[in-house]
Length: 263
Ligand SMILES: Nc1ncnc2c1ncn2[C@@H]1O[C@H](COP(=O)(O)OP(=O)(O)OP(=O)(O)O)[C@@H](O)[C@H]1O
Image 1 (cartoon, rainbow, N blue to C red):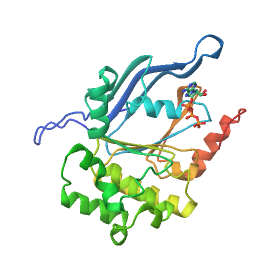
Image 2 (cartoon, rainbow, N blue to C red; image 1 turned 60 degrees about the horizontal axis):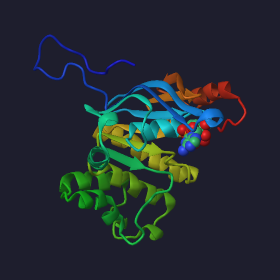
Image 3 (cartoon, helix red, strand yellow; image 1 turned 120 degrees about the vertical axis):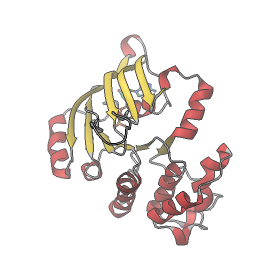
């Protein structure tokens, strides 16, 4: 993959080449031993460019979740390097990893993982509260307006629809302006209309706020919201589709007609 920024001969000096928001360099990861050994990632290299929405797809067991977890510092690699911004994740001890995840990474999971006793607003600001940081009010307002839930901020999760809860979870991921948001099947538990709301929100956060988002999905319609789809198979990156449409993605998925394929 190529860098997005270019050097110009005139104009103010700036970063000539912008580093990707996150990068994996030849990472490998196996689970189990002997006959039970499974190679989940086999020398995967991937650049996640800034302000871009990337979808990761591939058959069941192809390594999507393992790749996300390794890139987000939730799981270790056997070899290779992972960077978030200019920080080498694969060199950090547990304490620094916790701080990196807290300060520089946002997470959105299939299960919304909201705290049931807190209001929507309290859930959104929770990561900042835990970190002892005050929310930037202007930014908080922007995020709240973008998720379109200003009139629901005092509601608890049980008083919100699934789509609204997931939008709260997205806002919680965005509020600390992380380097990158990792979303693991964020629409897996939603009906198609709620899923579309969440995906539009994620895409807007990229287009309008310059956020970087990477999402694992099995759904070609969800993947079509992304700027780039990366396909994994057997722990390797096997293809990429820039500016995907659901039709193009579906067509590519037909190439994975192997036992155990989910679509
Ligand atoms: N904790 C673990 N212990 C043993 N094997 C594991 C573990 N986690 C994943 N694997 C194996 O590693 C391979 C990759 O798994 P991974 O969950 O990354 O795939 P995936 O593409 O996310 O699959 P799915 O689409 O079904 O969620 C699979 O063969 C899986 O069985």
